[in-house]
Length: 238
Image (cartoon, rainbow, N blue to C red; front, side, top):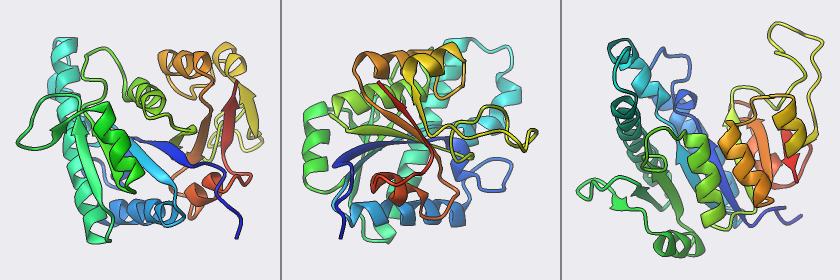
C-alpha cells in the first residue's frame, strides 16, 4: 500500500461545515460523516490536529450581535468554537477515536488549556487534538488560528475543508465554465485575492513555507485522497 504523503496535518474545519443542510447548529449525521473521514486518515497512521470554527452557532445569535462591540462578539465566537470542539470530540469517542480538546481561553472545567508540548505529545501518541477558541484573541479569525497552530505543531500541511472542491477562477455556482486551480503560489493567491484564507493566515503560511490545500469536506473520500497525495482540491505552495 502507498504511504500517506503527509505524516502530520492540521485540518481547518469551519463551523458551517457541521450544519449540513440546517440553517444553524450541529447536524448529527453531518458531524458523524466528517468524523468518519477523519478516522480513515488516522487509521493510516496520520497524526491529525483540528482547528474548528464557530459560525454555525454564532449564526443563530448574529442578529442580536449586530452593533455589538467587536471584541465582545469575537469572544462569543470563540466560545462557540469550544462547543463545536466538544461535540467533535464526543463524536470521535463514539467511533473509537481518542481525542483531546485544548482551548486558547481558560475554561478548565470544560477543556484543558492550550499547551504546545502536551498537544505535540498527544499527536505522537496517535490522539486527535482539537483546538478551540481560535487564537484566544479578538480580531483574529480561525483561519489565522489554523495557520498558527499548524506552525506550532510542525504540521506538514494545513488542510482547509470547505464546501467547494478547491479554488476556482470564478464562483463555480454562477460560472459553470470556471476552472479549478490545481496549484497556486502564495503570492498568486494574495495578488488575485482568491479567498483561500484571510490575508494574515496566508502571509503566515507563506513566510513559514507551510503549504495549504483547499478541498471539499462534503466530497466522499476527499480528505483521504489529499492525504495520499492524489489530485484533489487546490494546493497553495511556497
